[in-house]
Length: 463
Image (cartoon, rainbow, N blue to C red; front, side):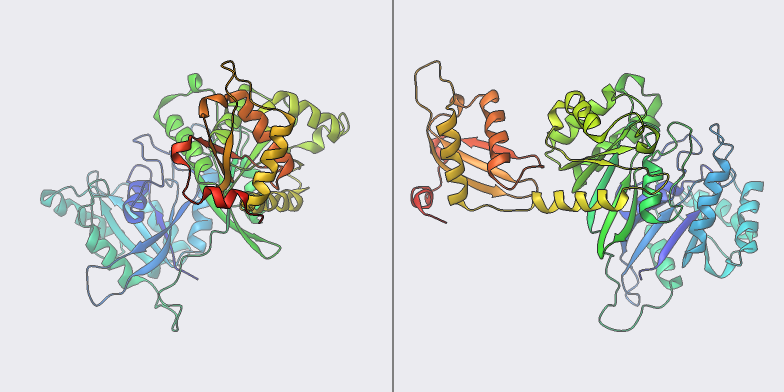
């Protein structure tokens, strides 16, 4: 197991900036508004020492919400519960203080929390916002918290990062002996991005999959702000569920926090292997759901439509009736399978994950050039592209160029003869004739000049 490093402190001391600094990328949302981070935001970080006597380590960095935040959405108790859950599994705790404001009563409360849980031996004190030498004397005030001399850093500029990394590596438990050292990052498995509008039940679903209280669940809209990666195993396979912020209409976004939350949701779609589009069965499909479908199709992501809260409506509708409704409401995703679940009661989750895995495997299949060209011949026999000029369209060569998504390349006499309507027809027929029935297909059409040198012989070869 790789060591877990948990970052704690009161609001606005720069914990999220520190996580991003150590991770080497933007993981957690950074905003001057207190209480932006609510859940435990984690990532894998590879720490490289500047001290040659220290070896590099792979760690899991975990950012937590600000302790003692007076949250306008009444989520303070939920945030503090997540902090305590994080502390319980930490091998090292970065207690972050603010060198600019000095020690305040909330810092003392965090120190008391750490002592109450018997964690003093795991604490490394960090004084943040030390932007230059003149700030260093004030940074040492944090020593009165009782956790030794603080490491002065500036998370925003990266100042003194090397000293912090070396101090972390010195304090981590010894590496396990053997060929596994240093620890390898845990396998993330199949990435499942869980997206949907607000209050569809995304966080409830993530907790149900993880089998633990991993993210905050609340009736308050907008509870989740960051995208949270939660690793879990099912039937011997590894998955990572990405809990995302609930999406609302772009014109309804309020401030930078919601803007960045939406951006991270869209980024989660791009990096996912499979997208789980969570639909609230108790309310009609919305414009936001349709926008998410467009984003999923734009990036050719396999998608499982997960109909949550089915237990609330199953007495009124049959699954067949609801699928018919979804086909009408989400036209572009008619080929996507539907799973009927109750995240709250844990119903249908194993079947949903199995279907998601099937979609991932389907998107990774390859067909031979012979199979593809025979399918192309059958499609041409059924319907040719319409040409207003009288030119006859020709396909010289068809081949599968890539997987995830399955990408089919057609080399033709004139790409302009294959308009958007015919391309949609072609993709739908490929979905029927090839083993890609439930996943998006990416179609690339190129002119004769792009024809590969081996096309002539390969096209006529029976695979």
